[in-house]
Amino acid sequence: MGFIVGIDGTAGSGKGTVAKNIANKLKLLNIDTGSTYRCVALAALRANAIKNGVIDEKKVIELLNKISIEIENTPSGDKVYLNGEDVTKKIREKDVSQVVSPVSSIEEVRYKMVDLQRKMAEGKDIIMEGRDICTYVFPNADVKIYLDASVEERARRRLLEMQEKKIEITYEEVLDNIIKRDNNDKTKKIGALKLAPDSIVIDTTNLSIEEVENKIIGIIQKKREKI
Ligand code: DC
Image 1 (cartoon, rainbow, N blue to C red):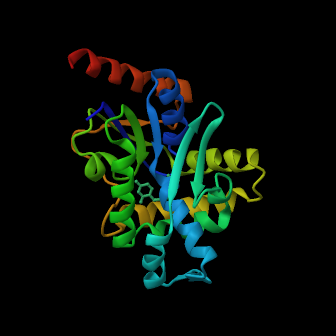
Image 2 (cartoon, rainbow, N blue to C red):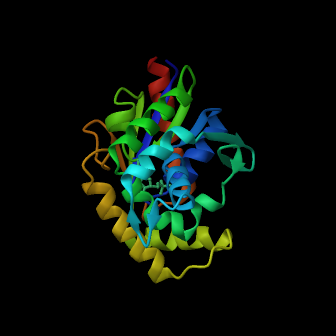
Image 3 (cartoon, rainbow, N blue to C red):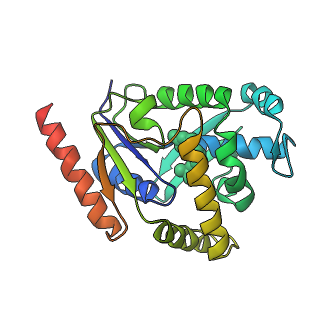
């Protein structure tokens, strides 16, 4: 087993950016597990397994054996492929964001994605970010971090991110989506966002990305010295 850094946290807490930058600096493979669930949600939308927000779970489960998901770390950011198609931008769009949390609550979806995530990590030094990394995917991770921030700050950050990607959305829509996702992410039966007892909590509301990165890098270096 390689060296594993797990980062869990709420939507917009900064885990995506922080994980990507730390991966670059410390030469770790960055695995954004949210993008695997986003791919399933996109595939489900395309296969009409979700209509007017109603999810046909049986159809989604059937789809699982027909899809392949790959994540490629590139200097300009991650590229995500669904059945060989580059869906990096599509999986961040509003329609996917609105349904991804309930899709990720389906038991079979979780088993399949967790299996995939563990395979992606096999034998490598990684930083993996998501919701259940430190509690379920890698409960024995070498470093465990939990990031959070106020809901208003997280909505502000997500809005900026989406505007940069030229996705049309208002602050109110983003805020509403984050509140709903928080609720669903924390209360779903399996794979819920929970704080592992041995995770280190960092509130990023008033911290810059760099400050958060430096804190985490410090924690990683301390741990590595002990190994
Ligand atoms: O990190 P993100 O916003 O891209 O994640 C998208 C959704 O996927 C999120 O609402 C919850 C779900 N998710 C999950 O259930 N478990 C993970 N390890 C990562 C994401």
